[in-house]
Amino acid sequence: MKLLIHTDEDTGREPLLRWLTRDSVARDIRFAPAPAAADSMGAGEIVQALVTDVTSLGSLVVAIAAWRDSHVSRAETPTVTIERNGTPIVVSGADPEEIDRVVDALLADDSAT
Image (cartoon, rainbow, N blue to C red; front, side, top):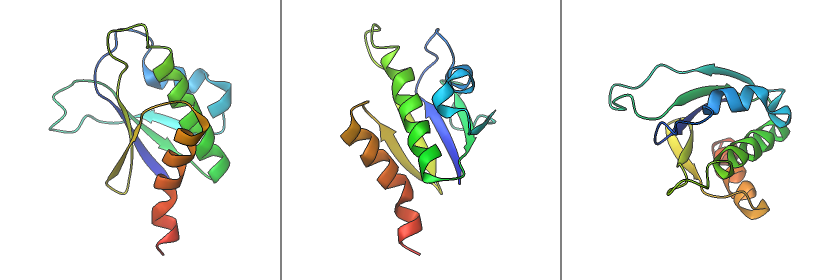
């Protein structure tokens, strides 16, 4: 499954793409920088991810949540949105219930077919 991952701002710290490619939890996922959308105005970061199974998807969400948590010393924690088939899902925490919520929402397209 192809996903786009958006951050809402340039954090001035380790970029999300670099974090994900170094994170051992997400080692089975292929990542690439995505071209900026015309309406993004260059803010933040957009990463493409290719996930092959549910386990990898869960690992990706955990890695993104860890990246967000590494930025909590800032005044605001960056917003990260994972988009699948045009449907955006915001990652808003790292607790297990939040990880499950995001994974279930991203898989919702599969259960509808």
